[in-house]
Length: 484
Image 1 (cartoon, helix red, strand yellow):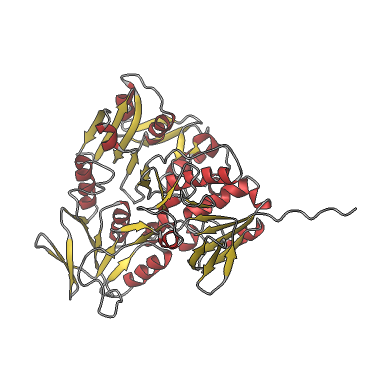
Image 2 (cartoon, rainbow, N blue to C red; image 1 turned 90 degrees about the horizontal axis):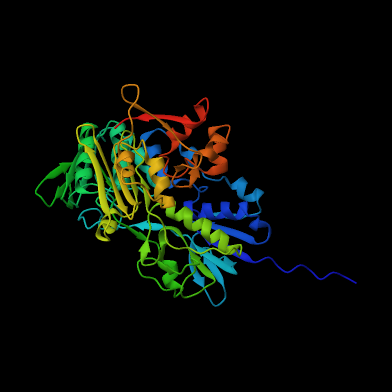
């Protein structure tokens, strides 16, 4: 009597090899799922998956490009995953359940995950594009490793000493700070009334602008670029003209949804998904990261994308989990600039939250909490992140605080004439991107082990100094940080 052959393993195809897709595959490997299903990852870029958030660190010169690699191709092969680089997808055929690559190759799937991220859009500035459709030589996007390398090459050319960055969001500030540390005379143009207008309020924006000016970066807010002139020079709608050698575009971007639209999936701003992160049109297709829209919201940050990846891995492994919406967590990764954002402060204030605020413009710090029913529902911290770990812990756990506790969190006790001795409990979150606690870091023997086993420091990089201090502390329990 012969045994019947084992049923074929289900075929999972992931379109995209960015940070969300990589996290999904890591979560599947951790669950042993790659032994039960055939996993194929289609990455459009010709390089191994890398940390896009740290591109500004490569531009700044503090990281080498190879240090950004999240997982080398050998790791995928070791776990039986078919990683195809330089594999651009032309279309999705839902009837035949396959995707076609631009070279005509067909890849069949039983379950498809779209992790296509976002794509840059050109701002309405005349002169960016030549008559033949090519970008002006002075114009640079900054979304990929190839963009970063092209900009680095431009910095090496004699005469390129001035730069204008269009966009005062997180990416724009990181790029501007990186160019400034390279010795370029750098200016930021932001159309809103203050920097980081989606994350922080006007007062905090003023402090951030002042910090940038102190670091040598000029800031123009409430002004829009209208035309790139010969010279080159950038004309603003307030009458100013900024001479420049390089123009870096960091404003403008939208979810990459062309494949989903072509396949007939419901798309609004992003690919509309339900609580299982499945398309509301086709349950065999999932989406996560920047391209997904859940509950009418899209995200543009690493923490929610990684949160979605963990949930989706559980769903694909038939765990009883659902996705109830991403927490908003954002960190600015730039030398000498500290910003952390939790939740949506404006929305929570409109919903009846109470504001607890401490500001010291002279010292360059602005800290605010929004508290509702005794719980921290939002926070913005500029210039002083000494208590961001504890605040994040309370935010995530929805801890009910006493009436004095929110204020105490914004006024850490001072010791030794200015430093703050802060004991982080094991369950305090240190890495917001990967959700890693101080206890998990203390259990590691080296920085490299932290990166490999927890993925802390591989997101925005904002926790790197805290991780190093925890590892170097004799009892690994006390963390010294700066005061307000």
